[in-house]
Length: 85
Image: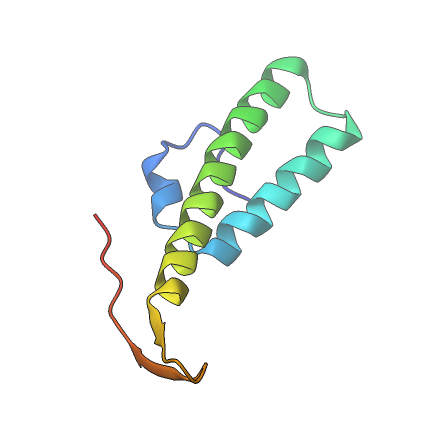
């Protein structure tokens, strides 16, 4: 499990799957109610950053899928590269 005080930059290096797994772990930890208040707040804040990271990764994937060009016959004709940034 990652350090809850680790900088947000380390989240940007995580794959979607890694970030989601850590987020699920944080949710389970918070739901258990076993952590002290201050630690729970830190974990919640990291969870919020992980959630935003996952949402950004999903949006990027959605945009890539939308770049597939479909012809009149409903068949994919080509895939244009997605532009991010």
